[in-house]
Picture 1 (spheres, helix red, strand yellow):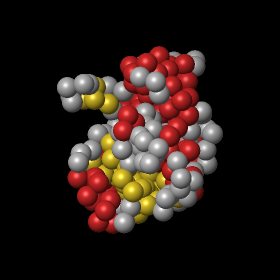
Picture 2 (tube, rainbow, N blue to C red):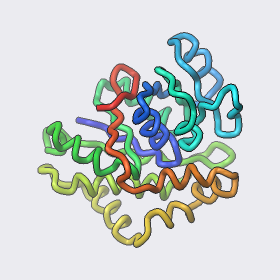
Picture 3 (cartoon, one colour):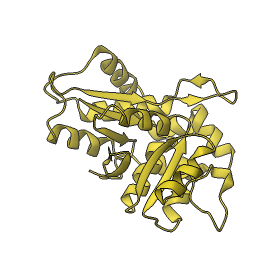
Length: 222
């Protein structure tokens, strides 16, 4: 079995951007311990978007990270996608970071590796988001991102579950996915908060062939 984690705004998009630039990304749960962990493993700890400085330009923002100096190892915490990835790595299963930019490449890679049958199934996890009080909320961007991966897997020999088929139906009902992402709650939050470029990077459909694979607790190119 293989697991695919989708957190479009913005963990898995940021992972793909970083790995595409040659960085090794360590997923880590959100919180103050990330900096201590980074020091322990000899890495740089990314900050929240609003904590970026000239001296420390590495953050969860894919726009900022696309311009920041390349470091060998980056600890990238986030409340949802990173925490899920860190927990999933403990299973020993292959874990892939997917988004709208690399969904097709991820699907091709999984099928090429022999996944997608009844004996080697694929689980696709839409990470979801959080409200200001920390409670979980549904996430349109992650549902559409997960559905984009499923669309790339639609020819897999094992077929799709009912849940996957419902996600694909939702994707088929959206005529303009980038516009939907810009207009959803998460997209509006970022745009209104001054991070419109993060959204624009995230909605570049099939713009990347990078497949970040989590091995021994670190995302690198598959």
